[in-house]
Image 1 (tube, rainbow, N blue to C red):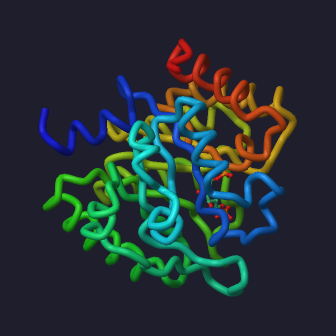
Image 2: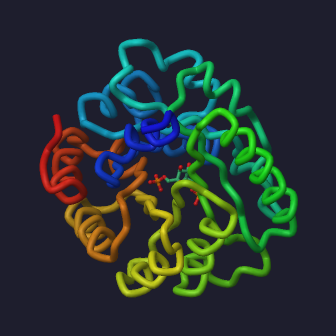
Length: 256
Ligand code: FBP
């Protein structure tokens, strides 16, 4: 197995992944956090003890908090992002490089594109540059593909999700992360549109636990390879038992 395959295997065991997303401090600001989730160490501990196959961090948080203690929790460095403060057409700014991510010990990098935005071309071009740099360093690239902007009427419609998944395949992502609109049949079609590229699904805003777990079951039944979830885990009153439930749904067993 080559380095890239080993890295992919680390974050998607047996082709299934359960990533803990924690880039919300940039994307949404501390408004997403409670007293525990505001502390990156507390969230990294959930990732480690909860048997997640990786944690998604922006560079700054990784630099200060991703210590050797978390070696068993693979790191995904998000290379671009935006804040919730800027209005208008969405544009994720490039904030890091694949080389820097590798120095931080990353097993993969993440990159957001907003198809439909008037800045789509810039983001697609930057994705291609990141993909080339990642190929050279044998680093997998996870594409967050979120259709968004004035021209997108419904970000989670059947058409939007299917188009997002297909874009991920077309642009050469190693894994594609899309949203879930609550309709299993739509997700099933999106997974089909992604072809041989595996699809991960975001968790979305914090829900009742039973409803979130039902989403997870539906997502896996629709053929997704797993989830990359944030708020529903680190805002949970019991993140570790929720993580154990997610592991059962995604891997068929608890791995910790
Ligand atoms: P959640 O599981 O909390 O929805 O996180 C997934 C995610 O993609 C994060 O990585 C990111 O910070 C956030 O959603 C962005 O959401 P949006 O672009 O819809 O504001």
